[in-house]
Amino acid sequence: MGFIYYERGRMAIAHASYEEAVTVKIGPFISSTDGKTVLSSLTQEVILAGTKICVNEGTKKALSTGAVVSSDGDGWYNVTIPAVDLIPQGTLLIRTVLAGALQVYRIFEISQIKLDDGP
Image (cartoon, rainbow, N blue to C red; front, top):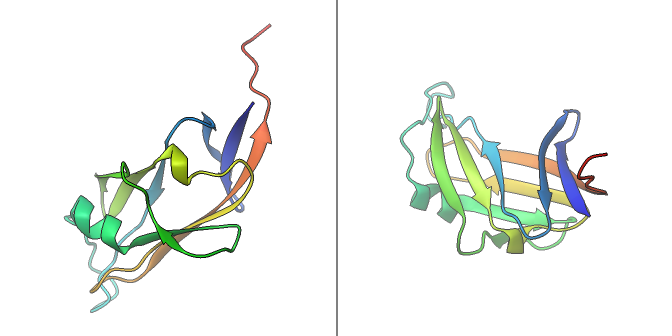
């Protein structure tokens, strides 16, 4: 048994088992000063400090130790969410609020699937 992440209104973005971390894209990060300048040199520490997750509309919390961020260019960043922060089913909100940037959020619906090893 595993689970599938899909963003509302989009195709599946990731498949994983319950024990695996999942990497998702967040962004684009845009300057709140002019609303158009792309922020492409943010550090992992800055993004993680401003990122909170919310599971099934519950309390917001910081990502657990082990989360990793890498730049993907043009203000987009790959965020690896540790398995301990993942849920088997429901809604996962990832929201990042940084000083000097417009807020960024992604909402994922998580559903259980049966993983088949083939015929």
